[in-house]
Length: 265
Image (tube, rainbow, N blue to C red; front, side, top):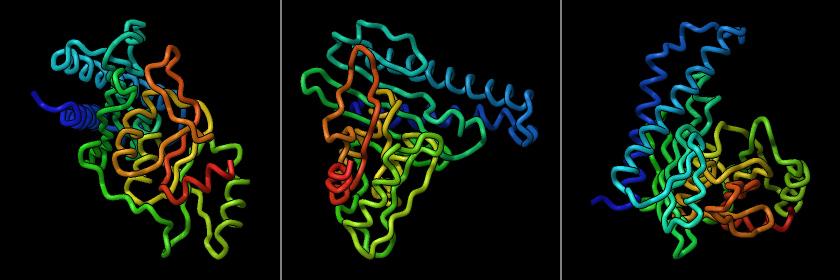
């Protein structure tokens, strides 16, 4: 039997390949860039089809390979039996469905495993299907812990919901780091934004509301394995398998920057 991390990575990668095939078959190039009603409906149908197909694939595979474990999926019915389960798989079949439906690359597939005994995530895989990359918690990339010396401090945030305190944070970091510029940019899904920090292209991902456990679990598992700081914006630890699976806010950052961000927030 494969390890839990190997299983997470294999399933996240396979689900990503599945949704890419669905998108290719949909032939987005035939859709007009004009966001009229027919185009919006076609893209919404594509998003729904891919989400459901990936969910069904992941659920069937986990049921077959880990039949005693519970599953929490963004696309599934939340079964309260998970609250007493010893192990819970937390999955997001397509993280960033809007980006997926627009034909963009910045979406992800999340597969993570939480265990009751440790109250921790013990496995996680973050697949970026359009790039062919899958990060997992057994093979983390080496993340630099210090501040960058040859580029700006880079913060990645949501395009549609940037943190309310973002302007104050940028000013505060500039004051703490004289001579160091601070750049803010956006990419798509929560997984894609976390991947920016894991890959060293950003120094922190900051989000202040609206995230759920399936948005956070797999990216957090991989980020922690890579040596990054992961917490709520007040520095408290994120808890999983809660009755209402809401996380809310999130900070993923290099250790050197995390302390500054937490102090400013």
